[in-house]
Image 1 (cartoon, rainbow, N blue to C red):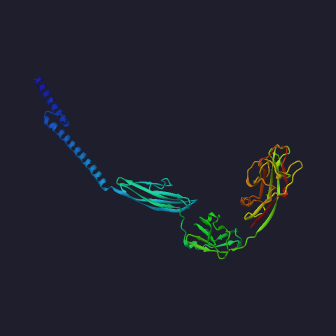
Image 2: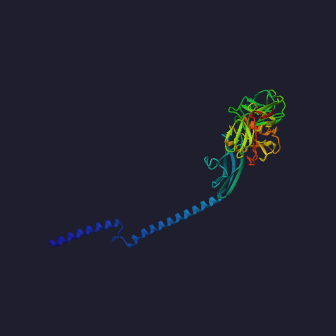
Image 3: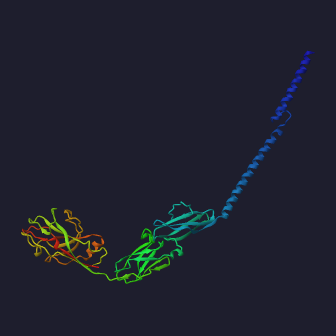
Length: 425
């Protein structure tokens, strides 16, 4: 009886445990005795198939969208167009005229931009080019734009230009001048009431005598212009012209006759340089040494400071005909084996041994005698004056420094006897 009760208890306990486990397994998706194999596998397969269908549909949709986008892009691409507009300038900066230009562009897709010239090196963006020009310069500025539909270009001619000034301001300019009279060659100051910032031309006797880019290039404050009365001019008004404007002086400049001046200028210094390097300043000798082993060259210097720097030389001659022969020497101007006698203009400054072989400008050469009295020096004297020198200097020599034939030839010039005769206006 006890065994039967125990058996019944064990059976009941086993049944309770079995049904509890079955419920748990059913929640986990594991096949339990109450669930068939077909029912367990059907649901996951359907879910997988549905996912594959959704992914395929999505891929097809994306591909169709890409094709439509490409088609739309091709259909909407347009060939570019371009124009050039000035957006800055002209502005004068130092000696440069600065101008900036912008490319006005259309086209799809957005075109690329290429300039043939850009002094800013892209500093203001790809669509802006800067051009810096010096006076008188000009160029053709070109821009090219390109996209998938084609390309286009535009060109603009750019030149140095000055900023325009208000005409009301420019009309106020007037001027006076000083001096009021003088001969041709007189320097005259034109005194302006206001500076002018455009090119200015000055006329006198109907001819242009001055042009400036703007008046501040002629004087710091831009109010002074300096002109010179031309040769052959007559009394007349000065006239200024600029940017379509013009103004005349209120009175005439009175041209007077030039005064002709003649001066005789004697040598004030000089000396002799030997081919061996010695320098003597007692006189200017030319020829050979007593032993016929050295050549001597003579130098003469004339003080021309009294001739005005603006002087126009009408005539000028050099006279070196006054010389003497030392005891023991033969007169080279009576015939000699030393060759041609030569005279050079040579601005040697203070005489030293290094002046012996300087070439200078040949003024005279001849084998005829006696020593010359009227050597024409007009051109070289005018050049020396224009260059600002205060002395006119010459070198005397024979073609050959010395010749060994047993006879020494030498002529000596008393320095104060050599002279220039000068006529100028």
